Length: 73
Image (cartoon, rainbow, N blue to C red; front, side, top):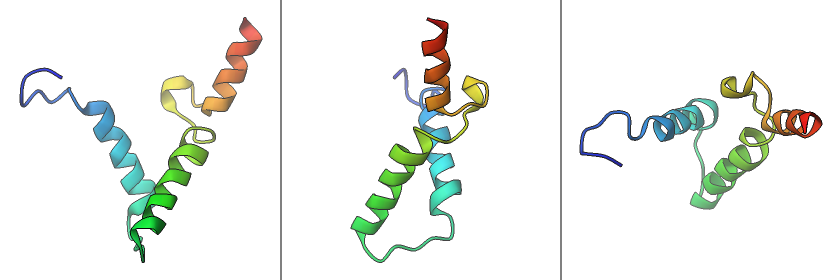
């Protein structure tokens, strides 16, 4: 982190949280904290980290990207 007010410090985190809000949380209501926690955990660990296509890795899922890397080695 650099000085206060530097708009680039949190750009990656802000982008990630915007994605969660728009893809998971918008117009969704949870009955309990545990239900919200489980939903967010499943989104991050199951969908986002394994299946969701990411523009930074040529629109492949992280699993596809890792497999491609293994073949090149």
